[in-house]
Amino acid sequence: MEFIFDPPIPVKIQKMKERVRWGHPSLVQRGIDQTSMVIDDGNSDNSEFSFIVIGDSGTTEHHGHHPQRRIAELMLAHREECRFVLHTGDVIYVVGSHEYYPTNFIEPYREFLVNGENPKRISYERMVFSLPILPVLGNHDYYDVPLMYRLLAGSTRPLRRLLRYKDIEIGWHGSYKGDAYARAFLDYLQALTSGEQLEYHLDNHYTAKTDTGRCLRYEPGRFTRLPNRYYTFRYGGIDFFALDSNTFNAPLPLPATKEGEAERRELVHRQHEIEQEEMQILEVCEKLNPEIPAQAEQLDALKAKLYQIDEIKIDIEKQLESHKAPAVDFEQLNWLKQRLIESWNTEQVRGRIIYFHHPPYVTEATKWHQAQTLAVRRRLRWVFDEVADTLGSLTQGRSIVDLILNGHAHCLEHLRTVDTGHADSFINYIISGGSGHYPRRQRKEGSQLMETFEEISGRDDRKVADSFLFVGRHGYDIQMRRPYSFVRIDVRDGRPPKFIVRPFVTERFLGEWCDVYLEPFVI
Image 1 (tube, helix red, strand yellow):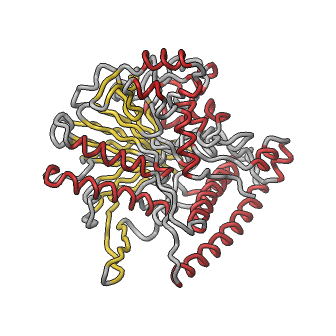
Image 2 (cartoon, one colour; image 1 turned 135 degrees about the vertical axis):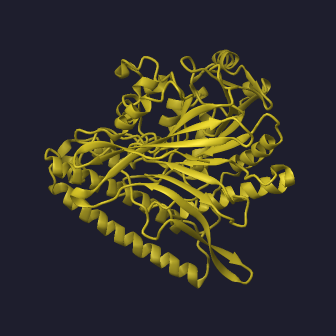
Image 3 (cartoon, helix red, strand yellow; image 1 turned 180 degrees about the vertical axis):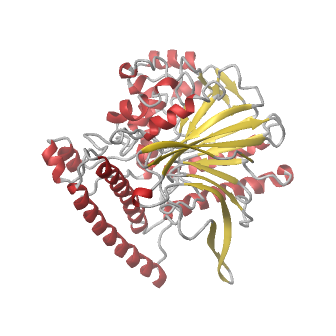
């Protein structure tokens, strides 16, 4: 039985458009740009500021310890000095269900919410942030559960035990194609049922102005909705671009060649192998008692492995289904291209940061070779090449963007591309995906990433990126260390800007927590 279902890309796009009433006449008549917002906190003109980056956090307590809450408590020490928190996606595990927002988001981050002293009284649809948390969608925020599993999972505990999943974070509901996320974070205009309500709302909350027209005014402590699933804002002379990578991550079709058929057979074989591995893990889970601490730790590790297997299965299925050109969200990619060009032609902008879920470059063991990873890399590379061709010498040797922030991989990592032969060369990447969910290991192949390029003369394998820092799971059995993390980034004045990256790590080892100090580094 499939426990997770990923909706098709065209469905994701259409549903999200409906929720924000994309292109509604009332918005068009007012000249409202539904992809921009202004953070009205009285500090957005300061050229020196700090912010926090977290990701892959949306879990609950694990048999007496709560990694996500532990990270949130460490973040509190920086609350007064940081202007906002960027979240790189996977806000709620496992299937983005509204059922888990109280325990997996509101309770852990209660100090960042208005009336957070009474978290049980906060509805996930009515959250107001005292310190902005600005997320993007992760794959788990879009996932759904099949009807048959919903019927079983919502039934009695003995019936759930038949499925051999104990206390897994899947219940009656999935995300309903991202609906729970949209109700939690987006300006859900679809809920305004009358024309008068909509017009009143627009005239009260879309009062900021940018070069592209009127836009949403984000007011910490009062109105903290996002305008769309992808959006942009300017702070301290830095343009931030938040993307939804779930709609441009579809793998390229397998070639209709002998090599393509061989790859297809290998994928089918791999699919069979991991299904067998899944059954073996489930059998072990059934024998473990979560009331015994040592077995509870083992159960946590096995559940994390099951989630990992589900992701691998979905990636394989995406490849096997790719008989024709995949659906790609070119509307969003072209929007990014145009906004980057405009950003470079705006005098007051001194830097650019992009954040989204799926990392184009990563050395985490389960993600570095995924077809989705390469798909995102190539589509973002296409955007950067298009921008570079348009800008010409305007960049004066600088990279198209200064920094890219991602999640998806459950680790903390800093990478930098080398000369790729494209406009994604010499860009720094920070993966902050270790803020709550079970951390994962670095690949055995090492810290240098290679890529195969199809040249006229044949295939050419060459290095495309180096990993300079990796914080993930290491050790085995009782010596296993599980580090969780977030980063604080201090933006300094100047053109180009300087970024001081401060990693913060807390480690679970032998049933105890231990904070780990890492040196800051400068980008």
